[in-house]
Amino acid sequence: MNLIIKNIIIAFIWLISAHLSGQEVIQFQKAIEIAKANNAKLRSDAGLVKYQQALVNTAYNFVPTQFNIELGQFNSSYFDTGFGISQTFSLPKVYQRRAAVYQQQAKTAEYDLKLSEAEIRQQVDHIFMEYNFLTAKENMLKYQDSLYTVFVDKTVIRWQKGETDVLEKTTAEQQKINLYNQLTIIGKMKEYIALQLQWYINDGRKYVPQTDGFGVLKYGIFYDSISLKKHPVLQLAEQEITTARAMTLAERTAFWPNISAGYRNVSIRGTGADNVVYQGGDRFSSFQVGVGIPVFRKGIKASIHSAQRLEEVKADIYEAKKSEISALIQQKYVLYNASMVQMENYEKSALPNAGLIRSVSEKQFGNGQINYLEYVMLTNQAITIESEYLELKRNLNMYIIDLHYLTTNYE
Image (cartoon, rainbow, N blue to C red; front, side, top):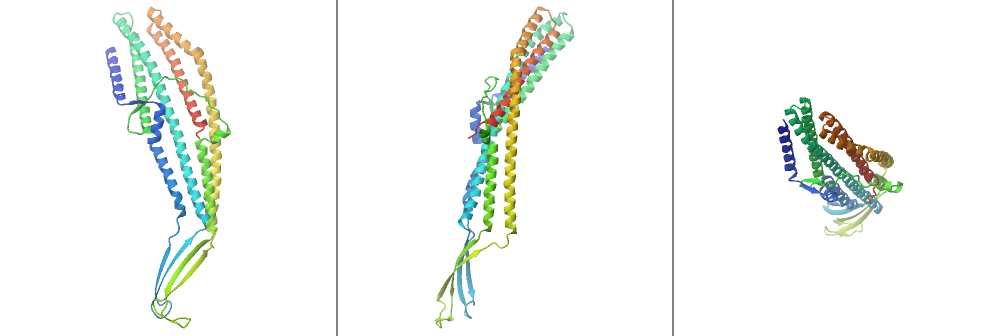
């Protein structure tokens, strides 16, 4: 049975090594740089920015110029010809306000891109932290596995000599199986996280996060109401208010008149009003200027009213998001401070106790002062303390990452 367990562990290590052989270790900052250039979400957001910017000049589109041709008896009983050209214009301010709407929509797209970049940085930060946590836990379990391997071998020998019963031998083997199962799960979780990283980077290559020890991340951020407003979520929400306001101003121009200008050229045959006989080749011209005034205004008023309501909605959304982010920061700070106190307690007492339990139990088991079952119980107690400490550091780092996202000045 012991040989079977060894073979399983060797096969497991070989499979993990084979999987990782085609992967490249990447640093956090490098991962962010590549993600900014290749991430599918960022690329689509950047494309939307260019699209909105390209729309700005469409605000100066004029209605089509109208060309008219007249044929028939419209001046006399003879066959006459005529042609005309006319163009309708809006006031210059109308085009300016339309352009302002497109400009504000382009800025909205830019802030949306900025928000996506901040969110992806946060997610990649989580990925690196989680991978480092799993690696630290994996190393802890591997160390424990190496100890159990030695003791399992001794237990089997003792069992073969009749110095111990089958319960001790079975317990020792079960501990190895439990460790193998935990290491398998951690290995799969690391594979899953590596796949997440590949999706964010999106350059067709396989990466694993660089592991440089699992410590507490640096944190020393100050924030106030001014810096809070510079968060991409609030910048985007504020920009949406500005865009809605520009749309309201553009809708108001529907009340303004249009101006039209035209030119007409016709032929006359026969005696004219001045008693002169004209032939078909004689041409006469005229010019027209008109003003278009919106008489039916119900629809226009409805459009303006709806635009004003949209302004109010966007303002409410801004206040809601501002309140939400402020509350999230306070909540994360509470959890961060509580975790810091817990970690200090662990480092002051729990971790030293775990180390003492390990060393004493190993020594007593080696001297025969305690049996294997007692040794396993004490060792598992030490593992539990060390695992809880790792989980505590993981949670603390998660709060730090989230606080960085919530309080960093992204300008």
